[in-house]
Image 1 (spheres, rainbow, N blue to C red):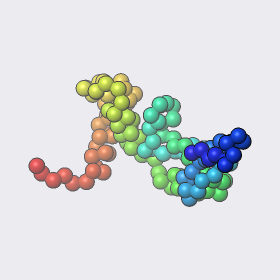
Image 2: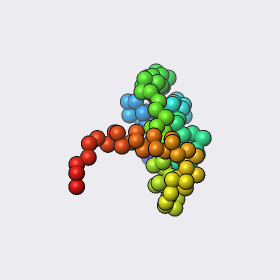
Image 3: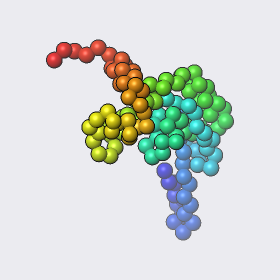
Amino acid sequence: MKVWTRNRARAQVVRLELCDLCAATFAQSEAVRGYVPDSSSADPHNGWFDGLRLITACGPAHFAIMQEVYRNRGFADEELWAAKIARALSTGPPVLTLVELACRTGLHEPEIRRAIAWHNARLGPRKPP
């Protein structure tokens, strides 16, 4: 978000951030950022960050609260694997086989099957057609 001053001749661009905890806006230079473990997070551009979520806070106190929230959430490998599968299925060419899915995700067949079972268990009961 950009904020401009009234006098265009002296216009300044102030980039704003949003606190992930309280939704307060503040200058980008004041942001407290860091990564927390999150098994639901698969980075869309860099697989090295899979399982990590970048959080932004308006100060150290809110950052500490967010760290504690994610620490208490727990980490499920199957959830991370499901996120990787979702990314593979929603980007690039269609995946037609389990072998292709394994190549695109870096997962092995048993991990893929466990991730699918984990995902399906969270969908709830299905109604018959």
